[in-house]
Image (cartoon, rainbow, N blue to C red; front, side):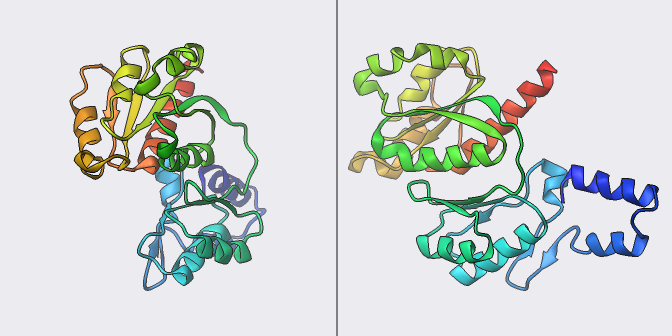
Length: 253
């Protein structure tokens, strides 16, 4: 249940359109619904502006399907990360509008139409970083943002990035995804006057240590305004960028 639906319910009670017993029934799953193997936090959208997200890794297909069904039955949008095609097929039997991003390994269902906020730019250093970037893109999009993508503009050919300087300057928040030595967020952070959310990926040869080298490079950036999420955590970057972009909009209103 989101703020709008709760407000509408309270208005209906106030004007006698809904009985108190019926209202209590509709609120029966707040603050959470216990499935035994999972406790679904239906109160999260009221607290944070977006419902609980399913992290599919380590869950069975049946568990992902059942959790998805309960979230969708509550009228909430669905985001599931690290999903498999089998999980997508199962969720699609619950809701025909389910969409699967094969590269980003995400399942999404948007249950209501709403205008999207501009301002999120997603930059990847290389094509190999796109799967993590797509997880970030799908996260930001389901949270109400129109995401512009700028892929394969890493430091090995810096002219590719500088040739798109207008996109960098027009954005309100920039997600930068990079593996190998992870230098791109520092470059972008040194060019713009807006928040940069850096995402190290596990892409690279042996000395990259599964993304640890990129993580340490980003944490040690000398460019101001760069914050760093965990290795391959496109979801965390997309979520943070969405909150920043939402705050930016509210500040301008």
